[in-house]
Length: 288
Image (cartoon, rainbow, N blue to C red; front, side, top):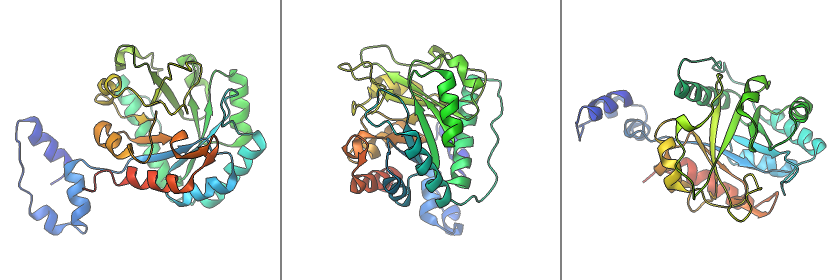
């Protein structure tokens, strides 16, 4: 028996399923039970790193991705030289172990997003950890230059950039969607998605600092995010920390959780013990 079998019976109204032989034959019965329940381990991104040693320690604790912020207005902005050193150190640390699923165009909007996250999972499995360059409202030429100069693996757009630039970029794009707690819930139809695969990152808006793009510690408006979370795979940020990430994973089932301020002593300086707890709690959200 597999998860798709459970989903089929659930969709036709079955409320309980008796499982026996599948667990008896499984090499890891606990892992098999988690699979049948739809439980999983999300990917974890630790964002706003500025120091090589902290980046490597973060990776050793199990981070799947690290984020380097190039946005001029960010308190966690990293210099080009520091970014190059971090990328080089992280790429030396990782081991390439296999083929990565290709990003391909799909006929439907939801499939474009699903395809992107399938690619991400494959890329992490083969080349963990990945490095994300985070940009916000910067000239396109500057973004392209910094991506080329530093060698990041993924581009994250966290500002008000026009979605039409996404197909022109040389790396896979994770696009932030900022949830306004006073606004209407975000739906897939309300987003001007490009015609190429793209990842969606739900993040919060701080009403006291609307010009700040992420890293504010403001918790996302869960009610406003729920409709989109039920529709497509996504990444989740916004006020996450070790004490609430497990609940967020169980509520939204995001493919990726992203944290910056929630694991810091000060902007850009990580509390490595909090990093360790955050990663553990995210990865073990269903271990109850």
